[in-house]
Image 1 (cartoon, rainbow, N blue to C red):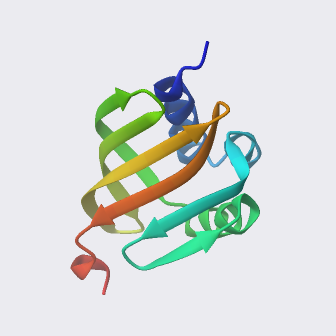
Image 2 (cartoon, rainbow, N blue to C red):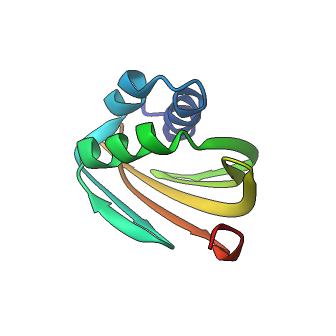
Amino acid sequence: MAQPGKTVKQFITSLNEEDMATARTLLAPDFKFVGVLGSRDGADVYMEDMGRMKMKYTVHKIFEDGDDVCVLCDYIMGDKTVFGCSWYQLKNEKISSLRVVFDPRPLL
């Protein structure tokens, strides 16, 4: 039985621990990312960026509705922390897309 929330939690934990190999296994090959500062097509391209950024997450709340998972969290990028929302969509028990919204002004 699929557990989208558990998959997303494992993905975030893997990113926080800089375990990019495990994080990558949770993404569909045709994964799509759309964010405030840009977009990425493909799991490998996205994971390459995440490996460079070494961004961390502090999760405040996770909401699950079928194959959709919403995460309210702080994104920690170096010495900057911004609050935002991540919308994960899963297909076949893999994360197929991620849409992220936050106020980018502290980063600019």
